[in-house]
Image (cartoon, rainbow, N blue to C red; front, top):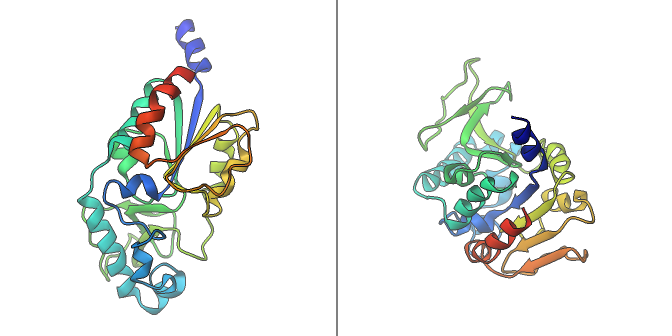
Length: 239
Protein backbone atom coordinates (compact mmCIF):
# COMPACT_ATOMS: atom_id res chain seq x y z
CA UNK A 1 0.00 0.00 0.00
CA UNK A 2 2.86 2.37 0.78
CA UNK A 3 4.25 1.90 -2.73
CA UNK A 4 0.87 2.77 -4.18
CA UNK A 5 0.70 5.95 -2.12
CA UNK A 6 4.17 7.04 -3.25
CA UNK A 7 3.36 6.35 -6.90
CA UNK A 8 0.14 8.33 -6.66
CA UNK A 9 1.92 11.26 -5.03
CA UNK A 10 4.46 11.36 -7.84
CA UNK A 11 1.85 11.44 -10.61
CA UNK A 12 2.19 14.61 -12.65
CA UNK A 13 -0.76 16.92 -13.05
CA UNK A 14 -1.89 17.75 -16.58
CA UNK A 15 -4.24 20.72 -16.62
CA UNK A 16 -6.28 21.19 -19.78
CA UNK A 17 -8.11 24.34 -20.85
CA UNK A 18 -10.57 23.46 -23.61
CA UNK A 19 -12.69 25.68 -25.81
CA UNK A 20 -15.27 25.54 -28.56
CA UNK A 21 -12.84 24.18 -31.15
CA UNK A 22 -12.81 20.71 -29.60
CA UNK A 23 -16.61 20.54 -29.59
CA UNK A 24 -16.93 21.94 -33.11
CA UNK A 25 -15.47 18.72 -34.50
CA UNK A 26 -18.37 16.85 -32.90
CA UNK A 27 -20.84 19.10 -34.70
CA UNK A 28 -21.47 21.63 -31.93
CA UNK A 29 -21.89 25.07 -33.48
CA UNK A 30 -19.66 27.75 -32.00
CA UNK A 31 -20.70 31.26 -31.04
CA UNK A 32 -17.82 33.34 -32.28
CA UNK A 33 -16.43 31.55 -35.31
CA UNK A 34 -17.60 32.34 -38.82
CA UNK A 35 -21.02 30.79 -39.28
CA UNK A 36 -21.50 30.53 -35.52
CA UNK A 37 -24.70 31.00 -33.62
CA UNK A 38 -24.20 34.68 -32.83
CA UNK A 39 -24.84 35.53 -36.50
CA UNK A 40 -28.46 34.49 -35.99
CA UNK A 41 -29.04 36.24 -32.67
CA UNK A 42 -28.07 39.40 -30.88
CA UNK A 43 -26.21 38.39 -27.73
CA UNK A 44 -28.42 40.58 -25.57
CA UNK A 45 -31.52 38.81 -26.92
CA UNK A 46 -30.61 35.28 -25.86
CA UNK A 47 -27.80 35.21 -23.30
CA UNK A 48 -28.24 37.90 -20.67
CA UNK A 49 -30.35 38.46 -17.56
CA UNK A 50 -32.09 41.27 -19.45
CA UNK A 51 -33.09 38.84 -22.20
CA UNK A 52 -34.51 36.45 -19.62
CA UNK A 53 -36.63 39.23 -18.15
CA UNK A 54 -37.64 40.69 -21.51
CA UNK A 55 -38.30 37.65 -23.71
CA UNK A 56 -38.12 34.45 -21.70
CA UNK A 57 -39.60 32.29 -24.43
CA UNK A 58 -36.91 33.30 -26.93
CA UNK A 59 -34.20 32.42 -24.41
CA UNK A 60 -35.82 29.08 -23.66
CA UNK A 61 -36.15 28.33 -27.38
CA UNK A 62 -32.53 29.26 -28.05
CA UNK A 63 -31.14 26.92 -25.38
CA UNK A 64 -33.62 24.20 -26.28
CA UNK A 65 -32.21 24.26 -29.82
CA UNK A 66 -28.67 23.97 -28.51
CA UNK A 67 -29.63 21.21 -26.07
CA UNK A 68 -31.44 19.26 -28.78
CA UNK A 69 -28.34 19.50 -30.95
CA UNK A 70 -26.15 18.28 -28.07
CA UNK A 71 -28.26 15.17 -27.57
CA UNK A 72 -27.50 14.29 -31.19
CA UNK A 73 -23.71 14.76 -30.92
CA UNK A 74 -21.03 12.38 -29.67
CA UNK A 75 -17.48 12.90 -28.40
CA UNK A 76 -14.66 12.88 -30.93
CA UNK A 77 -11.16 11.38 -30.83
CA UNK A 78 -9.72 14.43 -29.04
CA UNK A 79 -12.17 13.98 -26.17
CA UNK A 80 -11.30 10.28 -25.97
CA UNK A 81 -7.56 11.00 -26.09
CA UNK A 82 -7.83 13.31 -23.08
CA UNK A 83 -9.82 10.69 -21.19
CA UNK A 84 -7.19 8.04 -22.02
CA UNK A 85 -4.44 10.27 -20.61
CA UNK A 86 -5.98 9.79 -17.16
CA UNK A 87 -4.08 6.48 -17.20
CA UNK A 88 -0.84 8.48 -17.18
CA UNK A 89 -1.58 11.78 -15.40
CA UNK A 90 -3.73 13.33 -12.76
CA UNK A 91 -5.89 15.41 -15.11
CA UNK A 92 -8.00 18.49 -14.48
CA UNK A 93 -10.01 19.73 -17.43
CA UNK A 94 -11.17 23.33 -17.27
CA UNK A 95 -13.61 23.89 -20.08
CA UNK A 96 -15.29 26.94 -21.54
CA UNK A 97 -17.77 24.60 -23.20
CA UNK A 98 -21.24 23.96 -21.83
CA UNK A 99 -21.60 20.52 -23.41
CA UNK A 100 -20.89 17.22 -21.63
CA UNK A 101 -18.69 15.65 -24.32
CA UNK A 102 -15.63 15.44 -22.04
CA UNK A 103 -17.63 13.50 -19.47
CA UNK A 104 -19.22 11.23 -22.06
CA UNK A 105 -15.74 10.39 -23.39
CA UNK A 106 -14.71 9.28 -19.90
CA UNK A 107 -12.97 12.29 -18.33
CA UNK A 108 -13.70 12.29 -14.62
CA UNK A 109 -12.51 15.69 -13.40
CA UNK A 110 -14.11 18.48 -15.45
CA UNK A 111 -14.75 22.06 -14.30
CA UNK A 112 -17.24 23.99 -16.44
CA UNK A 113 -16.51 27.71 -16.37
CA UNK A 114 -19.65 28.82 -18.20
CA UNK A 115 -22.21 26.34 -16.92
CA UNK A 116 -23.70 23.17 -18.32
CA UNK A 117 -26.29 22.92 -21.04
CA UNK A 118 -27.90 19.74 -19.75
CA UNK A 119 -28.49 21.30 -16.35
CA UNK A 120 -31.06 23.85 -15.19
CA UNK A 121 -31.40 25.75 -11.96
CA UNK A 122 -33.84 27.62 -9.80
CA UNK A 123 -34.29 31.33 -10.47
CA UNK A 124 -34.62 32.08 -6.73
CA UNK A 125 -32.07 29.64 -5.31
CA UNK A 126 -28.98 29.11 -7.51
CA UNK A 127 -27.92 26.13 -5.36
CA UNK A 128 -30.87 24.13 -6.68
CA UNK A 129 -29.45 22.59 -9.85
CA UNK A 130 -31.08 19.76 -11.77
CA UNK A 131 -29.94 17.58 -14.67
CA UNK A 132 -32.24 17.23 -17.67
CA UNK A 133 -32.62 13.87 -19.39
CA UNK A 134 -34.47 15.53 -22.28
CA UNK A 135 -33.78 18.57 -24.44
CA UNK A 136 -36.75 20.85 -23.74
CA UNK A 137 -37.13 23.32 -20.86
CA UNK A 138 -40.54 24.99 -20.89
CA UNK A 139 -42.27 27.95 -19.34
CA UNK A 140 -43.91 26.58 -16.20
CA UNK A 141 -41.15 24.09 -15.37
CA UNK A 142 -40.45 24.93 -11.74
CA UNK A 143 -38.07 23.98 -8.95
CA UNK A 144 -39.10 22.51 -5.62
CA UNK A 145 -39.50 26.04 -4.25
CA UNK A 146 -41.96 26.94 -6.99
CA UNK A 147 -39.80 29.23 -9.16
CA UNK A 148 -39.25 28.94 -12.89
CA UNK A 149 -36.19 26.93 -13.93
CA UNK A 150 -33.59 28.64 -16.12
CA UNK A 151 -30.60 27.33 -18.09
CA UNK A 152 -27.61 26.59 -15.86
CA UNK A 153 -25.47 28.89 -17.99
CA UNK A 154 -23.30 31.89 -17.12
CA UNK A 155 -24.86 34.68 -19.13
CA UNK A 156 -23.16 37.87 -20.29
CA UNK A 157 -23.09 40.27 -17.38
CA UNK A 158 -23.00 37.47 -14.79
CA UNK A 159 -19.85 36.57 -12.82
CA UNK A 160 -17.84 33.48 -13.75
CA UNK A 161 -17.94 32.00 -10.27
CA UNK A 162 -15.68 29.04 -11.11
CA UNK A 163 -12.76 31.18 -12.29
CA UNK A 164 -11.12 31.33 -8.84
CA UNK A 165 -11.08 27.54 -8.56
CA UNK A 166 -9.80 27.31 -12.14
CA UNK A 167 -6.93 29.69 -11.37
CA UNK A 168 -5.94 27.60 -8.36
CA UNK A 169 -5.93 24.47 -10.52
CA UNK A 170 -3.83 26.17 -13.21
CA UNK A 171 -1.28 27.23 -10.60
CA UNK A 172 -0.62 23.58 -9.69
CA UNK A 173 -0.04 22.30 -13.23
CA UNK A 174 3.04 20.28 -14.16
CA UNK A 175 1.97 20.49 -17.81
CA UNK A 176 -0.65 22.87 -19.23
CA UNK A 177 -2.55 22.10 -22.42
CA UNK A 178 -4.80 24.55 -24.27
CA UNK A 179 -7.02 22.95 -26.90
CA UNK A 180 -9.68 24.40 -29.15
CA UNK A 181 -9.35 28.02 -28.04
CA UNK A 182 -7.21 30.90 -29.25
CA UNK A 183 -7.08 32.47 -25.76
CA UNK A 184 -9.08 35.51 -26.76
CA UNK A 185 -12.06 35.08 -24.41
CA UNK A 186 -11.71 36.38 -20.88
CA UNK A 187 -11.60 35.60 -18.03
CA UNK A 188 -10.71 32.07 -19.22
CA UNK A 189 -7.80 33.30 -21.36
CA UNK A 190 -6.17 34.79 -18.27
CA UNK A 191 -5.75 31.35 -16.69
CA UNK A 192 -2.49 30.89 -18.55
CA UNK A 193 -1.04 33.68 -16.41
CA UNK A 194 -1.46 31.46 -13.33
CA UNK A 195 0.63 28.64 -14.78
CA UNK A 196 4.11 28.54 -13.17
CA UNK A 197 6.70 29.99 -15.60
CA UNK A 198 8.77 26.80 -15.76
CA UNK A 199 5.80 24.62 -16.76
CA UNK A 200 5.61 23.49 -20.41
CA UNK A 201 2.52 24.79 -22.22
CA UNK A 202 1.09 23.27 -25.38
CA UNK A 203 -1.55 25.04 -27.47
CA UNK A 204 -3.57 23.13 -30.06
CA UNK A 205 -5.51 25.53 -32.27
CA UNK A 206 -5.51 26.12 -36.04
CA UNK A 207 -5.46 29.89 -35.58
CA UNK A 208 -2.82 32.14 -34.10
CA UNK A 209 -3.20 32.18 -30.32
CA UNK A 210 -3.40 35.57 -28.70
CA UNK A 211 -0.86 34.61 -26.05
CA UNK A 212 2.53 33.20 -27.04
CA UNK A 213 4.95 35.33 -25.02
CA UNK A 214 6.46 32.51 -22.95
CA UNK A 215 9.40 30.52 -24.27
CA UNK A 216 7.79 27.42 -22.73
CA UNK A 217 4.81 27.60 -25.09
CA UNK A 218 4.62 25.31 -28.13
CA UNK A 219 1.83 25.92 -30.63
CA UNK A 220 0.43 23.13 -32.76
CA UNK A 221 -1.64 24.78 -35.50
CA UNK A 222 -4.11 21.97 -36.03
CA UNK A 223 -7.69 21.21 -35.18
CA UNK A 224 -8.25 19.43 -31.88
CA UNK A 225 -8.46 15.87 -33.21
CA UNK A 226 -5.33 16.14 -35.38
CA UNK A 227 -3.46 18.03 -32.69
CA UNK A 228 -4.16 15.39 -30.05
CA UNK A 229 -3.09 12.70 -32.51
CA UNK A 230 0.24 14.51 -32.83
CA UNK A 231 0.69 15.33 -29.14
CA UNK A 232 -0.75 12.37 -27.22
CA UNK A 233 2.33 10.13 -27.30
CA UNK A 234 4.62 13.06 -26.50
CA UNK A 235 2.55 13.83 -23.44
CA UNK A 236 2.74 10.23 -22.30
CA UNK A 237 6.53 10.43 -22.50
CA UNK A 238 6.43 13.39 -20.07
CA UNK A 239 4.35 11.55 -17.47
